[in-house]
Amino acid sequence: MASSGCVVLNVGGTKYMTSEETMRGLCLSQDQLNLRDNEGNIFIDRDGVLFRYILNYLRERRLILPEDFPEIDALQTEAIFFCLHEMVKDIKRYKEEKECNFLFGCCLSFLASQNG
Image 1 (cartoon, rainbow, N blue to C red):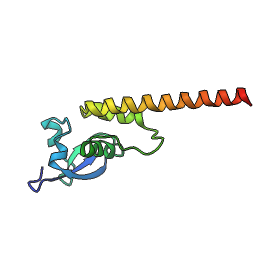
Image 2: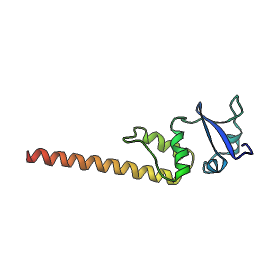
Image 3: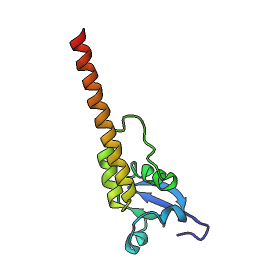
Image 4: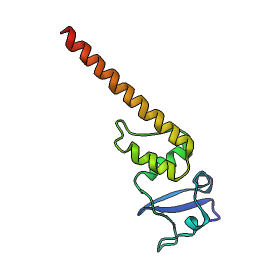
């Protein structure tokens, strides 16, 4: 890692710049930290697109996802890989809330169809 406090990561071909402090939140072995791409950046062989949500979680300590996020199961897999136990719990809550909202919407639709 650079002594400037910043580090460049290549995650599955997508480059990110973050702080050493944020990096400490990731569960990476020394072997993983030593793996470099051809530019000398730390290379992590994971989903580069989803990694942005991992970094955001490390920075904010909460899930920041777009509305109707379609890759929640894949993100949960990434959170498990990086040993982000609190993020995994938050993802499970997110999924439960989505399921509950879906079921509630279905019940409302059913009730409306019975009354109309």
